[in-house]
Length: 206
Image (cartoon, rainbow, N blue to C red; front, side):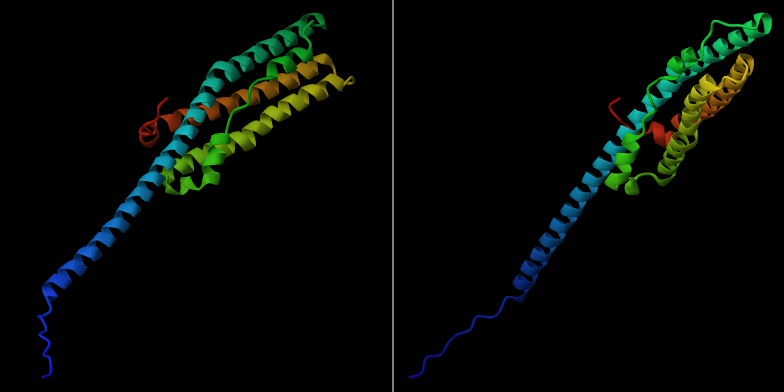
Protein backbone atom coordinates (compact mmCIF):
# COMPACT_ATOMS: atom_id res chain seq x y z
CA UNK A 1 0.00 0.00 0.00
CA UNK A 2 1.62 3.28 -1.04
CA UNK A 3 2.49 5.79 1.71
CA UNK A 4 0.82 9.16 1.59
CA UNK A 5 2.85 12.21 2.71
CA UNK A 6 0.95 14.86 4.54
CA UNK A 7 2.31 18.32 3.69
CA UNK A 8 1.84 20.96 6.34
CA UNK A 9 0.78 24.36 4.95
CA UNK A 10 3.61 26.86 4.37
CA UNK A 11 3.54 29.69 6.89
CA UNK A 12 4.09 32.54 4.49
CA UNK A 13 3.48 35.19 7.10
CA UNK A 14 6.22 33.82 9.31
CA UNK A 15 8.61 33.61 6.37
CA UNK A 16 7.86 37.18 5.28
CA UNK A 17 8.17 38.41 8.85
CA UNK A 18 11.52 36.66 9.31
CA UNK A 19 12.79 37.95 5.96
CA UNK A 20 11.69 41.47 6.84
CA UNK A 21 13.43 41.20 10.20
CA UNK A 22 16.66 40.00 8.59
CA UNK A 23 16.46 42.74 5.99
CA UNK A 24 15.83 45.38 8.62
CA UNK A 25 18.73 44.07 10.69
CA UNK A 26 21.08 44.34 7.70
CA UNK A 27 19.90 47.87 6.91
CA UNK A 28 20.29 48.85 10.55
CA UNK A 29 23.83 47.43 10.60
CA UNK A 30 24.75 49.46 7.49
CA UNK A 31 23.13 52.56 8.99
CA UNK A 32 25.09 52.14 12.22
CA UNK A 33 28.28 51.61 10.26
CA UNK A 34 27.63 54.77 8.23
CA UNK A 35 26.81 56.66 11.43
CA UNK A 36 30.07 55.50 13.03
CA UNK A 37 32.02 56.56 9.93
CA UNK A 38 30.29 59.95 9.87
CA UNK A 39 31.03 60.50 13.55
CA UNK A 40 34.65 59.46 13.02
CA UNK A 41 35.03 61.87 10.09
CA UNK A 42 33.39 64.65 12.10
CA UNK A 43 35.70 63.95 15.05
CA UNK A 44 38.85 63.89 12.92
CA UNK A 45 37.80 67.05 11.07
CA UNK A 46 37.31 68.82 14.40
CA UNK A 47 40.75 67.69 15.57
CA UNK A 48 42.32 69.05 12.37
CA UNK A 49 40.53 72.40 12.73
CA UNK A 50 41.41 72.65 16.41
CA UNK A 51 45.08 72.11 15.59
CA UNK A 52 44.81 74.89 13.01
CA UNK A 53 43.05 77.14 15.53
CA UNK A 54 45.77 76.51 18.12
CA UNK A 55 48.44 77.42 15.56
CA UNK A 56 46.60 80.59 14.55
CA UNK A 57 46.31 81.65 18.20
CA UNK A 58 50.07 81.18 18.52
CA UNK A 59 50.65 83.32 15.42
CA UNK A 60 48.36 86.10 16.61
CA UNK A 61 50.16 86.28 19.96
CA UNK A 62 53.53 86.23 18.20
CA UNK A 63 52.49 89.18 16.04
CA UNK A 64 51.22 91.22 18.98
CA UNK A 65 53.90 90.38 21.53
CA UNK A 66 56.98 89.88 19.38
CA UNK A 67 56.80 91.14 15.78
CA UNK A 68 55.21 94.53 16.49
CA UNK A 69 57.54 95.39 19.44
CA UNK A 70 60.54 94.41 17.29
CA UNK A 71 59.37 96.66 14.48
CA UNK A 72 58.85 99.54 16.88
CA UNK A 73 62.36 99.00 18.23
CA UNK A 74 63.88 98.92 14.74
CA UNK A 75 61.96 102.03 13.72
CA UNK A 76 63.15 103.93 16.80
CA UNK A 77 66.70 102.81 16.17
CA UNK A 78 66.64 103.94 12.53
CA UNK A 79 65.13 107.30 13.47
CA UNK A 80 67.83 107.80 16.11
CA UNK A 81 70.54 106.98 13.56
CA UNK A 82 69.05 109.43 11.03
CA UNK A 83 68.84 112.14 13.70
CA UNK A 84 72.50 111.63 14.71
CA UNK A 85 73.70 111.56 11.09
CA UNK A 86 71.89 114.80 10.29
CA UNK A 87 73.22 116.48 13.43
CA UNK A 88 76.77 115.15 13.58
CA UNK A 89 77.31 113.25 10.29
CA UNK A 90 78.07 110.07 12.26
CA UNK A 91 76.32 107.51 14.42
CA UNK A 92 77.29 104.63 16.67
CA UNK A 93 74.27 102.63 15.54
CA UNK A 94 75.28 99.73 13.30
CA UNK A 95 73.28 97.80 10.72
CA UNK A 96 74.22 94.60 12.56
CA UNK A 97 71.92 95.69 15.38
CA UNK A 98 68.96 95.62 13.00
CA UNK A 99 69.90 92.18 11.75
CA UNK A 100 69.95 90.86 15.31
CA UNK A 101 66.53 92.37 16.07
CA UNK A 102 65.12 90.94 12.84
CA UNK A 103 65.88 87.37 13.93
CA UNK A 104 62.66 85.98 15.36
CA UNK A 105 60.52 82.86 15.40
CA UNK A 106 58.61 82.41 12.12
CA UNK A 107 54.84 82.33 11.92
CA UNK A 108 53.51 78.79 11.74
CA UNK A 109 51.35 77.06 9.15
CA UNK A 110 52.19 73.33 9.44
CA UNK A 111 48.84 72.39 11.04
CA UNK A 112 47.00 73.94 8.08
CA UNK A 113 49.23 72.05 5.63
CA UNK A 114 48.65 68.75 7.45
CA UNK A 115 44.89 69.38 7.60
CA UNK A 116 44.85 69.90 3.84
CA UNK A 117 46.92 66.80 3.17
CA UNK A 118 44.68 64.67 5.41
CA UNK A 119 41.65 65.48 3.24
CA UNK A 120 39.44 66.34 6.21
CA UNK A 121 39.13 69.99 5.18
CA UNK A 122 36.67 68.77 2.54
CA UNK A 123 34.21 68.14 5.40
CA UNK A 124 34.88 71.45 7.15
CA UNK A 125 32.82 74.64 6.97
CA UNK A 126 33.61 75.87 3.46
CA UNK A 127 33.46 79.61 4.22
CA UNK A 128 35.60 79.25 7.33
CA UNK A 129 38.16 77.05 5.58
CA UNK A 130 38.32 79.53 2.69
CA UNK A 131 38.92 82.44 5.08
CA UNK A 132 41.69 80.59 6.91
CA UNK A 133 43.25 79.53 3.62
CA UNK A 134 43.30 83.10 2.32
CA UNK A 135 44.96 84.28 5.53
CA UNK A 136 47.64 81.58 5.40
CA UNK A 137 48.30 82.26 1.70
CA UNK A 138 48.87 85.96 2.38
CA UNK A 139 51.04 85.18 5.39
CA UNK A 140 53.24 82.66 3.58
CA UNK A 141 53.46 84.46 0.26
CA UNK A 142 53.47 88.25 0.48
CA UNK A 143 54.22 88.76 4.17
CA UNK A 144 57.07 86.25 4.38
CA UNK A 145 58.56 87.82 1.23
CA UNK A 146 58.70 91.21 2.98
CA UNK A 147 60.58 89.74 5.96
CA UNK A 148 63.05 88.02 3.64
CA UNK A 149 63.52 91.24 1.68
CA UNK A 150 64.18 93.11 4.92
CA UNK A 151 66.99 90.73 5.83
CA UNK A 152 68.47 90.84 2.32
CA UNK A 153 68.33 94.64 2.24
CA UNK A 154 70.21 94.94 5.52
CA UNK A 155 72.94 92.69 4.14
CA UNK A 156 73.05 94.74 0.92
CA UNK A 157 73.20 98.04 2.80
CA UNK A 158 76.19 96.79 4.79
CA UNK A 159 78.24 96.31 1.63
CA UNK A 160 77.14 99.44 -0.27
CA UNK A 161 80.21 101.51 0.56
CA UNK A 162 79.36 104.10 -2.10
CA UNK A 163 76.05 104.93 -0.41
CA UNK A 164 76.14 107.45 2.42
CA UNK A 165 75.17 106.14 5.90
CA UNK A 166 72.27 108.62 5.99
CA UNK A 167 70.77 107.25 2.79
CA UNK A 168 71.21 103.69 4.07
CA UNK A 169 69.25 104.38 7.24
CA UNK A 170 66.57 106.33 5.38
CA UNK A 171 66.14 103.37 3.00
CA UNK A 172 66.01 101.00 5.97
CA UNK A 173 63.44 103.15 7.76
CA UNK A 174 61.20 103.12 4.68
CA UNK A 175 61.37 99.32 4.55
CA UNK A 176 60.57 99.03 8.26
CA UNK A 177 57.54 101.25 7.73
CA UNK A 178 56.38 99.02 4.86
CA UNK A 179 56.88 95.91 7.03
CA UNK A 180 54.92 97.57 9.85
CA UNK A 181 52.01 98.39 7.54
CA UNK A 182 51.88 94.80 6.27
CA UNK A 183 52.07 93.47 9.84
CA UNK A 184 49.16 95.66 10.91
CA UNK A 185 47.16 94.40 7.94
CA UNK A 186 48.00 90.77 8.75
CA UNK A 187 47.07 91.36 12.38
CA UNK A 188 43.71 92.80 11.29
CA UNK A 189 43.08 89.66 9.21
CA UNK A 190 43.71 87.56 12.30
CA UNK A 191 41.42 89.76 14.40
CA UNK A 192 38.62 89.49 11.84
CA UNK A 193 38.98 85.71 11.69
CA UNK A 194 38.90 85.39 15.48
CA UNK A 195 35.65 87.38 15.59
CA UNK A 196 33.83 84.99 13.24
CA UNK A 197 31.10 83.03 14.99
CA UNK A 198 32.02 79.79 13.21
CA UNK A 199 35.64 80.17 14.33
CA UNK A 200 34.63 80.91 17.92
CA UNK A 201 32.28 77.92 17.78
CA UNK A 202 35.20 75.51 17.29
CA UNK A 203 35.09 73.76 20.67
CA UNK A 204 38.69 72.91 21.37
CA UNK A 205 40.63 72.20 24.53
CA UNK A 206 42.81 75.31 24.41
